[in-house]
Image 1 (cartoon, one colour):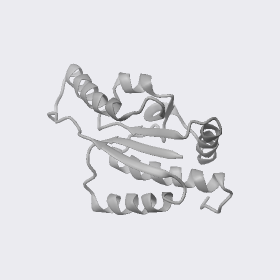
Image 2 (cartoon, helix red, strand yellow):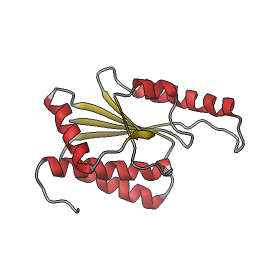
Image 3 (cartoon, rainbow, N blue to C red):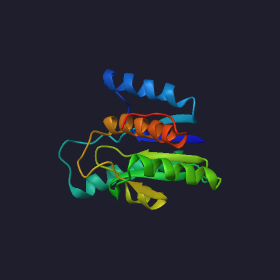
Length: 159
């Protein structure tokens, strides 16, 4: 399976980088993984609704430019479905079984994802109704993808 994590913004925090690097290393035994960082749009602290939409649209264009036509896209969105770890594992197994072995997970910037990205997505996934920093979501996503592979192969994992 080939997995891409397409995310807005550069990772700055050392503690997150160390955790992410660890899961990238662990995942190398299960899949080909690529993390693609697209630039976030510079924006003032205070913005109108129209300015926020413009920022999301510009970031969305950068995201869409990284998505391949044949990729199955799972966008992380607060309004998405909440899956258990077992459900994520089953969904990934189902994709592989049906020849959809190229999967892209998309993480938006601080304002979320543009409508055009949500429309391109094949599935919307939510980790919680809470809001998390998108850099932290990257670490949680990698851990869950790793856990999904472990579940799929019947290997032990922390419950």
